[in-house]
Length: 132
Image (cartoon, rainbow, N blue to C red; front, side, top):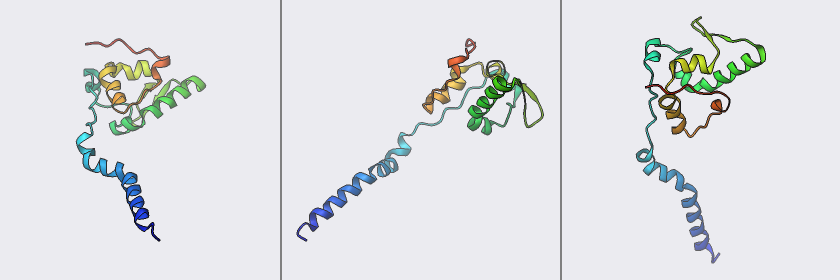
């Protein structure tokens, strides 16, 4: 038991290194965190007031909705989406979504850049020209 001090020192160093990310975030996390961007709405989107679903739902589930639209359009040939409010929309990224959110740079890219997400939408689709 002559190595008691070495073992205790090793354990202390192990726990300091193990817990370093937690302590670092606790001390510097709030100060270093960037605030989430607020997507800029076009005048047309402001006039529409509602999207195909509530804003919170669209913020979290828009990619799942777009995937579902893609599957139903391509596989089933169904191009009409009926929203929960009963209103019908064309299931189209280019025609429906980008009609109101034509400012891709300020709307789509601001959040995707913040979250470091690189969606593959534009691998197949072309986005409309930015308008001032």
